[in-house]
Length: 66
Image (tube, rainbow, N blue to C red):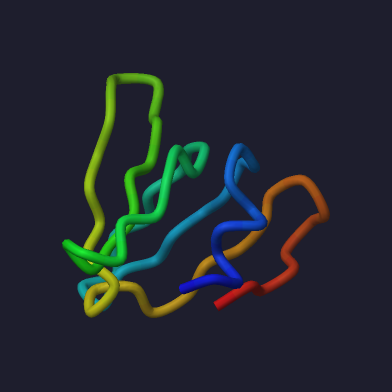
């Protein structure tokens, strides 16, 4: 979870285990609740870590982070 903190404020694309794609900016990582908050154009969304299959940085192309 610490490695995700350095990407705070970066635009990312998160693909969950159901195939849904979430795009936004990582607002903060919450190890207590076991997830991260993603700022989207429509507000804030909490994504639990157990749902995340892949996380890509959008700033550097399709570079996989997690």
